[in-house]
Length: 440
Image (spheres, rainbow, N blue to C red):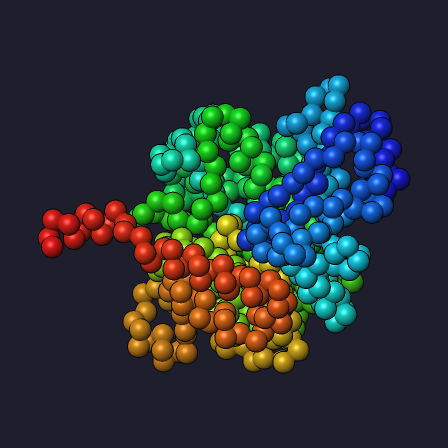
């Protein structure tokens, strides 16, 4: 879509307000509204705002920023529109007053890495699976259903919530592949059909807002918190991904025993090599590491496999005639990450593997959770960082991560995560009170 088409739709559909969306460095969706009268000017010149008030953007002495809407992201918001008056949204790129891209804009970080992939002849496709929970309120993790994986239940509130979310997604041209109940009580998943990574990152932000908005309308709460309940599975964001050259899947090789090309193998090796350095971005919160523990379907061991879901990367088996579906599934990210930065770092790691022609180790055949530490060590299988503090240490030393994120985002991210860890370690938890108060 271009400017002319957007203005035409706004007039025909009687759109009165347009919400301009962008995300801060932590992946929190921000927006402001403009009237339809201001839209043409916004498309031509962008709209100014105070960047010093946005997490990770600018200091107060250099606070003037401009949000320039991307016409291709124009969509009508179905839950805000009536038959008489419409409300739409557009995702914006954040730029400096000079017109140059702003280094602290997560969307620009992803665009920059996608441009690198393009210079190598590749288009990056992703298909994320975002899990989430429905709770009665945002105060306590009180479940609203007792379903399990793929359970067929009578029409209840959760089923209705999922269905309405899908209707809204479809009305905003976000293709949905399927949806289902997940393993834990009150845990659900809606899978988006794969697409090019920039549009998918926009779609992920749309998906998360819609899920939360539909829940709010029905008086409950939806959360993408990675591990809200002790003792049951947390929520992940498994990311299926592949590189294409034109219409050909660069990951496919008919003659290979795994049907993987050399490009695919180098790509996998790159992600495995840099996994410890990028996990701070793909799993950015204290709570993220409560999910990344053995035994709850969350992978922590750095290896790959075909059917083995205990591995960090799974390669779905090839189906004859489905060459374009050849892909890898990265299983450690969680849905509370910033999708622009997460897609950027995983692509950058994979491309590094391709550039350096990294050799891929043999796949892990057994359940890695059941191996002893000695067995894993003998096979050269390492582990992800065990908590946010350890992840910060790996990230802070990473020249690769700094280069990928850019100095602005990298330095803010490290600073912000250190502050989060310092605040967390000073807390006295309920666990400590229950365990130590009667004893000490």
